[in-house]
Image (cartoon, rainbow, N blue to C red):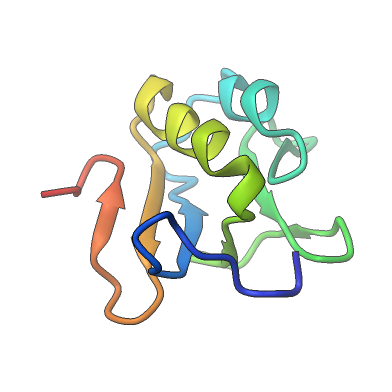
Length: 100
């Protein structure tokens, strides 16, 4: 996951989780365990290239193209509406609660 991945329209995407809204259901980790994981606090976090959970508020990771559908489905199905997928180039949210 160290290489920026691009969506089908050619735009690189990244994903982050707002832990203040996370309900700890773990749906994201079921859809895309390579990207999301629940920590001992019961909240979901994105995982860095080294599999380490990124716990800083707003920490984002690139969306791997092979997992794009799983990450988008996670954002759509999340009961806490806390998963945000945005374009890297301008920060526009493409999927998630703030998507236009």
